[in-house]
Image (tube, rainbow, N blue to C red):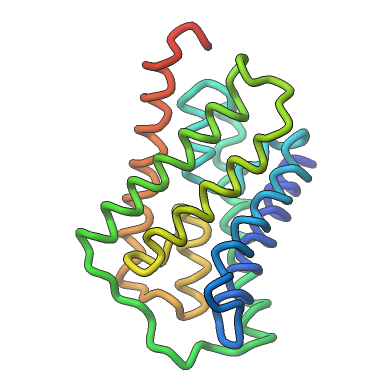
Length: 208
């Protein structure tokens, strides 16, 4: 139960930071840095308890890689989605809905970048947080947080830069993204996570 609570807390503060940093008055051009930093500190805070996924796509990748028991997959994803939802409601309570119309990105472009950067995120997570060759390293949280920072700076204007189905739910509830676009995130994120797991296993056949 403790690890599910940790997944809830980490995802809650990730989505909370996204809402507060992006909705006006927000952090402006520093929003991606705030978001990546929030993920980084939550990864360091909860990594020793739950693995600090905070992302259903990461949970999928870690499960396919063989480092997450099947019995934990659904509870992890449920805790992450609930955390994202409650964070969204908290942001709306404090700031209200955005005065800017929800983003409606180009489907193909957004799907492509969500797939690519979710792949990058999950690939980094698998290598720095699950590989026996990097056990005990002190940089795993920094690497994971900066992957998200780089992704949001690079393609946030294209897709919204979710790379995470729980974040996708959160930004949809907050009115930052249209409901009709949520499939882009779900499909791109889960495909990216699955390919990252397959790639990790291909590149590291001895790391089982």
